[in-house]
Length: 407
Image (cartoon, rainbow, N blue to C red; front, side, top):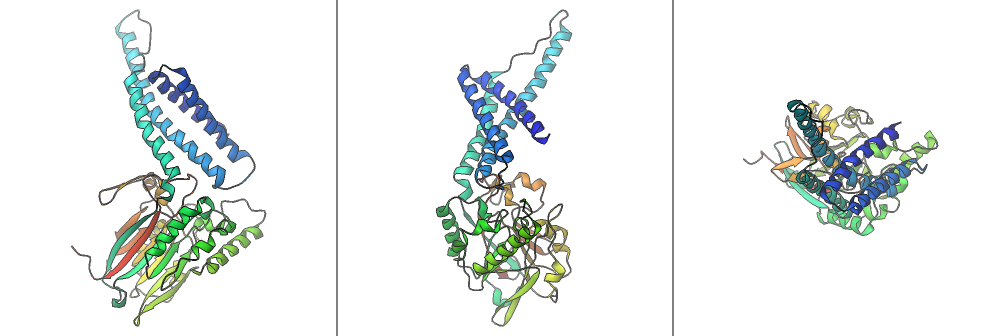
């Protein structure tokens, strides 16, 4: 039933899209080609999700979703403008009928210039999303931040952290581009590297072809990691509960094989010149229907508010719901999860928008509340839509500084 409703909505939107092309062009072959491509995209999507083959959100399924969105988003623009025009046409036609007795009710013709505007506006997301699939998904960016803390131990003044998140290795299909991203991470030469969850889409096997490359990521004080919601395999149909548990154990072993220190509701200390900071790592904890395996009390047992702490927690809703209110005062939290929805508009220092902000209060970049700071990494990889538009794959580099933030 859900697929039937989905197809009906899609076809209704296509009717409006057809009207746009018909109004703008007198050549019928143009809108027939459009209809053919649109229906082919729909048919491919239905096939990929109903063929019985479960590839998760990778491979052909991912591209089916991508091309569907490339066509669907412009349709919404067509619909909003054309439906709005239909309302106006309805009132104009009704007004004429009432004002002039004996006049038949007729809708005014569509205005060509409005269809041209709709076509121009729709071309923007159409081209952008195609670009996002072709290049944007591997357009890695290094975003650098300097954060000031009064209680940072003196020995860690100038300490550099690199963070990546949401690798989603099951979506990768270009070894050369991924190597470029990993090399870019290594070039930052930070004191420590943190990974904040979602190494795979579903299965530990997705990392098999990539673990040698990611094992080249090193740092003077090590590489530390936590699990994200996708790492537990909850979005895949497993033949048995035992197979699912085995998958998680294999993934944990993969972290070890890469030389990454996987933290499961525990803490470690990073020491320098006789001083130390606490590194706390929790399993996934997410608001709503997401897995809540994270145990902040267990992970920070024995720590006090006086200890300087860096918390690795995949889902930023954990920070909003639990962490920032905790009496132990977690100075810095590093998260990911949102991907910035892989779609949005950012003008650094001026403007930042993505649809994901209506779901997550803290969704990309640095936020500070109640003397606590969180960085939400936009993600290294991608999921479902095989692209990025405006929200690029990110390597965060954070320098810790002792003292108050300069005015």
